[in-house]
Image (cartoon, helix red, strand yellow):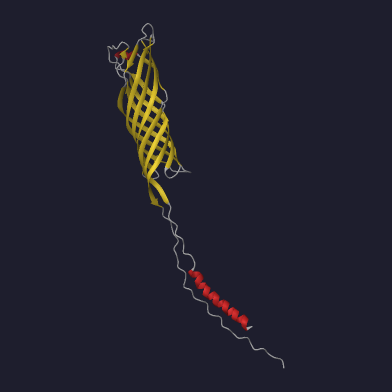
Length: 290
C-alpha cells in the first residue's frame, strides 16, 4: 500500500513539473505577411487589328465638280499595327500614348456628270500614321475580366497615293493621275473593350474603336499627256473608321500597396501556479482480532 501511495505522489509531482514546461513550449502565433495588391505602374502595349473605313464626301476646287454626283466611295479593310506606353494610376484609371501605322486601304469610287452622260471611275490607296493620347476607365474586375471605356485625341498623317481617274465614256476614255499627297489632320477616338489579366505582368485586350481621321486629298490631277488646265485635286472630307483590335499590355513597374490585415492580439500565458501537493494521510492501522 505504501508503494501505491508513493506512485501516486510521484505522478502528481511529474504532472506539476511537466505543466510549466508544456506551457513554455507552446508556439507563439505565426505572423503571416500581408498580401501585396497591384494597383498601377508603367506598361508597354502592342496592337494589331483591322480597319473598316468610310469617307463622308468627295469634293474638288474645280468648279466643274459642282455638277458631279458621286455614287460610290468605298475603302477596303486594312491592317493596323501599333505600339504605345502607358501608366495605370489605380484599379480604375489609366492613360497611354500610342502610335500606329494603318496599312494601305484600296479606294474605289464612281461618279456621274453632265446629266448622266459622263462617268468617271476612281482608284487609289490610302494609309495613315496615327498618334493618340488616350485615357481609360476600367469598370471593375470579375474573374480576371475587366471591361473598359476610353477616349483619345491626337493627330493623323493621311496619305493618298496611286490615285487615277478613268473617264469611262467613249470616245474620251481619258486618264488622269495624281502624285502621292500627305497632310496632317486632327484626330480623335472612342474606345470600348474588355481586358483579361493573364498574370501580374501581362494583360490581353480586345477592343472596338471609332476614330475620326480628319480629311485627306490627292495631289493635282494631271492628264495622261502631263497637261492640266485647272487645279482639280480630289478632297476626301471626314474619314472615319470602325476598328477592331487585339492588344497585349506588359506591366513594367507595378506600384504596390499593402493590404491591412487585422492581427489578433497576443495575450501572454498566465503565470503558472502549481497545485498544492497532495497531503499524505497514512492508512489506519490494521485491527487484529484477538
